[in-house]
Image: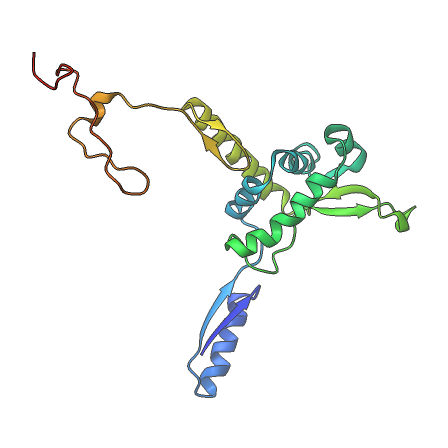
Amino acid sequence: MKITIEGASEEFAREVLSLAAQQGANLTIRTVETGWTAERAERYLRSLPAGARTFARLVVVDGDGRADADTLRAALGKLNGPTVALSRAMPRGVREGWWPEGTPAPIEKVDDPDHPSWQKAEAYVMSRDLVPIFRSAFARLASTQQAARAAGLHLSGAGKTSMSWAPDPSMLKGHNLVDLEGGSLPAPADDDQNEEGQQP
């Protein structure tokens, strides 16, 4: 029998194993932490489009865990796009196995208490214990992006990079080349041969 317990402490898992042993059952229990780690936070940020990532940065870095909706609107315009991207990131992360189901969304909306029926956001917040984790993830992301630019890579979307690079033909001599489907490519022309393939 295999049991997966999400969000339980190791102590709880030990208690369950002890109880099963008393009943003569042989169980394997794997606990899955549903909280945020620096790696999960970085993966979350990388998965966001630029506008939603800027939204998150304004909440986490600039706002230290809170950004007024008006401040966000002044920086980004309408908030529909970024907020939809933030909400879609959570189920996508579960599907991709980046974090387990039950992991709470890191950024939450605070409704205007004076106009609850409008459902217009007053602010967006992140809990105090998550701010250092996501701040660290933003720092790692910035460091990675800086290193990519230094290497000649260009950012081209959410968590993606692209580059243009052509190897020096001398680097390819003596190597069999294959294309992405595994087929052979012609060997690069030897500069020491003339057009007929004869040595001068």
